[in-house]
Image (cartoon, rainbow, N blue to C red; front, side, top):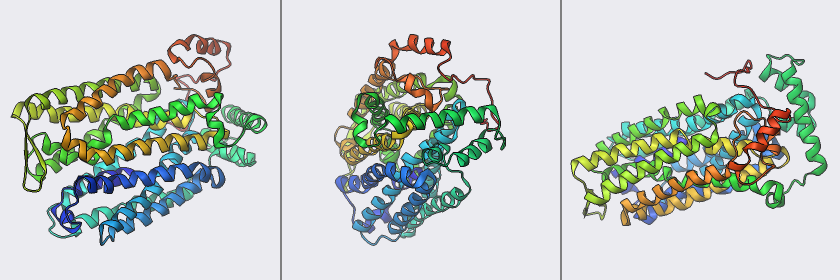
Length: 485
């Protein structure tokens, strides 16, 4: 849903029919229309924690589907710019709730050894939504009426309806059930998920006891308020949850996704058809290169995945900046749109590097930015902490999408250089501060985050806990009836 809504407007912004209907909005107007969705996401994610705790993860997802569909209907029927903006804000409320609740719901259902892979499916679903939206737009850009943009916008109601119906067949989170006193129901859910309904399976009994003990301790010692996010035991994890989302957005991925046709035009592709086709291919690259992360994230680990992804993104941006900055020649058309004239060789280099950046992001920051925050927080504060870190994602997304149309025109290749510096810096940030969480149970995180804030210095302590048996290290060869690939 979010992927489709992200991608669908990127192409529509270049449709003559859309521009004419909404009176050719300038850079600021386009920035507002694009970014208002993320403003809604920010607000929605702030309320998502309370909803998920009170009404369950399952019901919260269903509520979000209804809200998203309402916003999509308003967008589809827009008769002026204000109505379009209002519809995107309402859709954003739904996306904001989903973006926090879905990864948390997945992480609470998944066994530790495939949790990363399972939560990564959210990012893969986002990329599929982007791919579908790009090619729907491409197929309709020949239509000479407002149908060209109304139909693509209206289609986004379909996945929301499918998810809403599918949730009737999904279980409640066993951790939420235990936290609300429904231990027997949680036992049945775990047995169905882990052991084909065998209530006496050792893995099921052990995991249920771990959850019960975690909830019991939280009930005695924990304060369930947002104020606890700033207390010493939790604030380090909150900072890392915010950091992984912030760095994901500061990679510039949504500049590429929101404004891909404009960027490809600046890179030397002439004609609307060519830029939309290149955009469609970028969506395919994004989708395909998320698959390696799904397959290997629980073997590579979160730290290595992020650091190698940052290296690839940084190199791609740096090469783009050099190739574009050294050879570009600026011109402006009658509408004031910027055209960058690049020689054929540098133009091809820039286009290839755009795809390299997308591939590097898809294999790293794309999935890990959702996996990591969903697994590091204790049960009693998980919803509120995830809500806060996800809100940071949307706050950075909002700012970047608001100012990007202006920056793309004003500093062109300088924006690539800024993103390159951020990506290279993120390698050091991850190495210094982000502990490894692969193959750890959610209940193990108290020990993982109980040492030095310098993650690279804390490996010895973690190894000692592993040797003593105090950490529930999950072996790579351990299997459940639920498997992926």
